[in-house]
Image 1: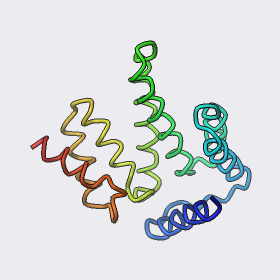
Image 2: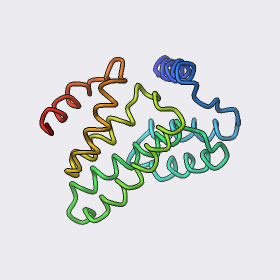
Image 3: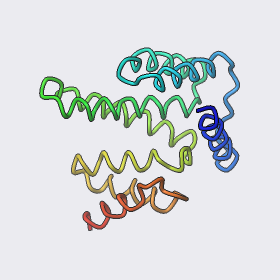
Image 4: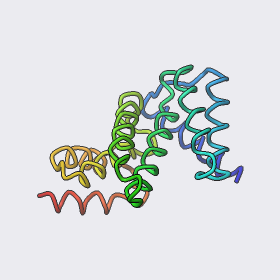
Length: 165
């Protein structure tokens, strides 16, 4: 577990150097982020609300905390999927998707290469599923051109782009 966290933080540090992403300095913001990560690790379903609150607070303290924005986007992504699969909450999908877009665009603004350009992939995936193919193609192509290892998503992105053409 500790090795995984060290690897995660080292990969983020490498991307920061490569992309010249903002350096996060505020210790309170970092503590809030780490607490949110710990909560999500202990149980997403049970702890996402508190983690979300901690991440929002971290971005208030440190407005350039791109990793906190990314985690906020991922929470909204998971909430959208869950809402989509539940007839009682399907109306909430748009709300979660809109929040995800807002946070991913902020990540791209602050640190485009964060998490191997995953923000581009998730935006492309969202727009593809919403049948907004021009936006989907834009973000998926940016992801394909920029990603170094694709984390298993390059093939999916390529398939989406080929279907659009």
